[in-house]
Length: 376
Image 1 (cartoon, rainbow, N blue to C red):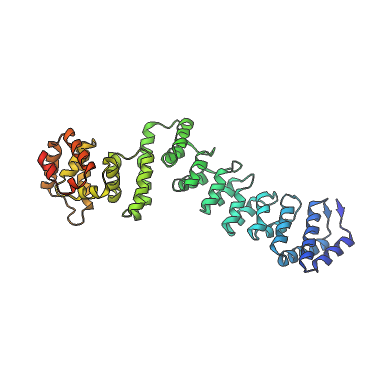
Image 2 (tube, rainbow, N blue to C red):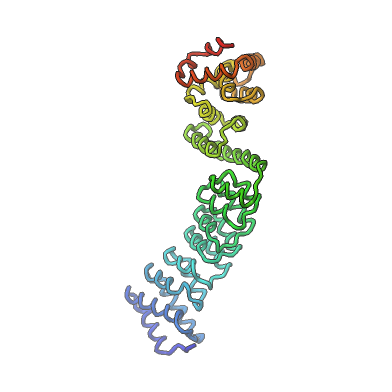
């Protein structure tokens, strides 16, 4: 340790009085040298003077000067906390070096900065080599996707069960978060199962291998995941483009099947039902729109027969899909009776021949139900 000389104090005071850009830069360099070099012993009066100089420097220097000071002081362990907090709460260009690297800032300091400063400051904190559970909790509370993504990919971060739950919930609706969260060491089997159908095929294989997720758990997770996905898109259920994206999502998970058709209908996603049925039958959506609202359900019976839907599931599909009709959504017992009779009378072979004909010439079906009636 060395004592600060009177000449050194006078030099700092002189530099503090120089308001030019060059003077500001020289003062910042002198201040940095004082805290980076050999430890300096300050008297109470000298400490007071230094604090005044620091305040003046921070208040009257341009961003590049403050940024240079921050870069030099970021890794020093002898910088006054007061100075570091001022730098840490500055513009992000100034704050970032200190936020990412300073070992002097406590967890309490970091939590305060995360909660009081813009998201860029939180993101810088998330980049630290070590992030405590308390700081990680504060980071996920921001709700900022970029902040959470940086945290999830930082293996030097310790994440509490509470924060892990928040990350997993966010990951289900944020593609960038899914793989980093699934690969976190804190993820347990329950969390992995809940996230299973939100991640891609490679991550699903990773989860099965690591956690030994069973087939029954996977099926249950898929049903819950579909419910969550459909709930997320409830306000867009009449938007064909949005529903096509949901259909793509289901197709990627090989979930376009009879069970999903019924699940989709039960929560009122009629457009998605039509889009999925169009994909299963390889018919144009306009053809499916006609089939679904057709009185009597004969064409729908033929389509269901052709793609292997059994009678109980046909009944469910027929009854619930009536909700898509623009006028009468109540199914008269006679209409259901006719639909069931049509389903019973048409054979699998004939229904597949009809489907093939409709695929080649959709207008054949659109002209009416005469073709179905002819084979009954």
